Every structure is written in structure tokens, then in C-alpha cells.
Length: 339
Ligand SMILES: [Zn+2]
Image (cartoon, rainbow, N blue to C red):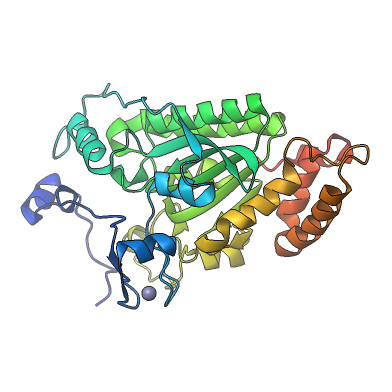
């Protein structure tokens, strides 16, 4: 039976009556796991070894922000930035329970202080600053602290002159912070604009799900944008649109593969190849110190980079051209700006 035509009921009383889902513990990235697509079962060790991707069918399980950092860089090889920032509750907001209580619960169940972890690390030996979202902390929602940490990370990357790598996984703006959360959309976009002025490349990886105010702000502004297979990338999820428009959407609506066909992302990349892929782009856009191809200093790097540009241009010609133009001051084409 289609959901289309059903009335929308957002009453808190109804949710309370139904035993609201948010009150149940959500296991986002368990250590062991059964694949929801093919029912294969994996031990904690197998899950870690396969980067939480099902070897049988390729289903991508959720990953915590800190595990992401280990997957992208070297194990234990990152320095977390501003881990002590915590959300305030200026609206003294309460839905089914007070916002401060929700934050406290999220903190104790995830071991994180917020829905984003910023860090300094090396990806394939290229120093960079990363901002990684974690869906297990209140649905990866963006409140004032997420916006603040993101903006600080942008400033830090600009100051250091190193690339900025963003991984999004978020339901959107945090409802409990109201307009303050929506303001983070503008704040993060302005922060990225400053990075463009500083000619710092930005790579965005869209993980499942990237929706709402996060997709409508910084997540859609990368110079190079990758998506994980099957990730939902949309402003509104298909259920909300179907209930509002009373129309049935295609089954692949908003999925990474559809967004690739629509030109919204540059490539859909398997998680197990992500670090190598990012490393290749970073080596072109921001060669490690001492390896810059200047004055014949490193012929090998120049040859590698030339090969890399060719390969990169084959897989995402438009993005590669824009990103490369942006870091070359004399290209004359840099005003079109990817931001
Ligand atoms: Zn599977």
C-alpha cells in the first residue's frame, strides 16, 4: 500500500502514544554486524578489516567519525582540534525531553562531544585539516557547535595553507537550536568562501545520509565531491516529499548514483578506495613540502602529477579543471569560482 495520500501528523502526543522512536537506543555503527541487504554476518574484526563494507554485496555500514579518521589517515595518526566545545541551550528547548538531556545522552552513548570531529592529519602523506561528521550523535545534526568547529577548521586550514577535507553524514540542521542552527548554514558557506580566497582546495565526501541544511550549505560546495555508494543525498528525504506532494518517487531518488547521473557529484567511490583516491587528488592539488615541481626540484613528482591530472580529468573533468584553475593564479578562469 502506497504511503501517498496519508495525512501528516506531527503531534508530540501521538509520538508519545506510539512510544517515540527517538527514545529507543539506536545502534548506528555496532562492532559486529549483519548486512541488511544480503544477511551476511560479520565479526567485529571482519567489519573493521573491511572498513565496514559488506564484502559480499558492497553495502556500506555507518562509521563513526573517529574510525573515519583512522581509515583516511594512519591509525592513531591524527590530532583532534577543539574537542572540548559543547552546545549551550539558549532557547531552553524541550520536546519529549530537555535538549540538555539529549546532548548528555548523545555524549554518553557515542563518547563524542558533538556531531563533528575536526582534526589535523595526513592522508597519503599530504598534510590536511579534516572535518568529519558522525550520524550517531543526534543524527549528525548541525547546531552552533558544529558550525563553529567547521568554521574554525576552515580558518585553520587557510592559516596553514593545507587542503580541507570534509565528510558529511547528517540529517540537517538541529531542530532543538531553531534559527541558531539555520544560521550555521550561512556561517559554514562564508567560511568556505574564505578558503576559496586563500586558494585552499576543498574535498567533500558525502556519506549516507547527507540531507537538509547540511546538503543545502557546505556539503554541496566542494571543489571535488565524492559520494559513497547508495548514500542518500537530498534536501528532503523521499518520504517527506511523497507525503507532501502525494506523488510516488523513483526508487533511486536522491541516491549517490542518481546524483552522479545528475551531475551533483564527481564520482561514487567505494569506501575501501577512498583514501587512495583522495590522496591522489591531494598530491596534485597540494604536493607535500619539498615535492613541489619547481625549478626542476622534483621531476618525478611533476611526472606523477601530470599523469594524475590526466587520470583525474578523465573521471571528473569539470571539477578537476575548476579546482586546478583555482590554484593557478594566472589561469584567467578562476573568477567563476566553485563556491
Ligand atoms: Zn551484504
